Length: 232
Image 1 (cartoon, rainbow, N blue to C red):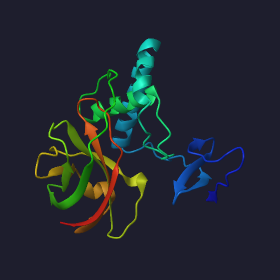
Image 2: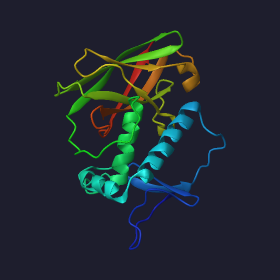
Image 3: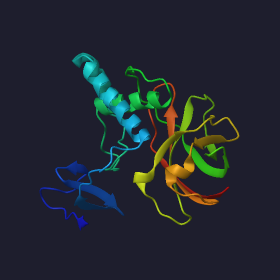
Image 4: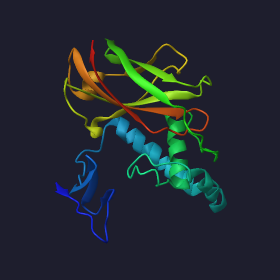
């Protein structure tokens, strides 16, 4: 692990190039050897990769004029990855891919049409508790926001581990919660959770990135990090 030292030519770095990956921790940039997975991926990872490939093909199927229509709507959207300086913006291609993934997550995969990006309402999420039944783990969340349209769903990227374990973003898995902010609680179902995390415990450390998913546009909000201990 080598820390990147800014200079006149390179002030910061993000992502991978060649066999080097740049990542951020504690506000500093570090470089490491790029990791190449020795396994093809889980069924969920393969399914997600397949959706992404279809999203890319859908973008390429658009005319150049249609692609340009996405650009003005993307200029106000901040990226979900660094730099989080409130100055960077995404491209029309990024916004299209994001909307495609959003609708696919909702079970309505299709080629989206460009629409204005609207600011998401302020929201708060907390874990209310968890229970297990028939091999599945059910996590109940309290979702609060100043909105009564019922157009938003809670998308949770969940990591399960032993109590006290820290964040491992590579262990996050996507689960769409059932219910809207108007309900008393929304619930995430994690099928076969013991196999997912490789642990059969009565108490779990839960780390999650909680995201609002707009059912009208397919767009996603910035995430809120939530961590807690749950007992079954």
